[in-house]
Length: 193
Image (cartoon, rainbow, N blue to C red; front, top):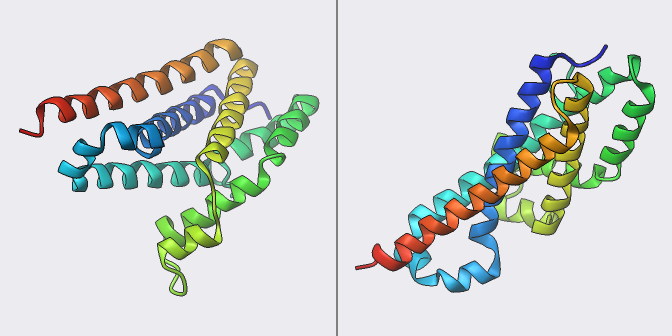
């Protein structure tokens, strides 16, 4: 069965949230910004730590949700599976693209389950991240795969083109990153006195 418009819009919304969370998180973790905004980060450590943790948690929760295979949920994985009945070739292409990132997806799911969904009694969050390492560039690759698959599904629905959806995701990421930088710069310039 072809995914419904409502299901596609739900996934687009989730991927937009993921894109915003990644963009803001990246502005806090990339080395250039940590050096450039050191004074702001040191002056307001609770705010920036909370923002970092919140964005990181959002990333892992949304990724786990997008690849949840339970039949009673709307997920990217389930929409690709449901596409098999109407467009098996496209469903196979998307499944292959997702499978190329299977280990990254599984790592994100493990971190979601062991750190954010539940707390593993045998592992601290820090130990969980050591046992299941994931790099920012890995999250970037996975984000791009998710955006591509979502845009492809949106085009199947027929209301949007793949390029329009990908352009929207790009704007969302750029806007969130720009706004995060502006906030940090404002704090850096005016909030320390």
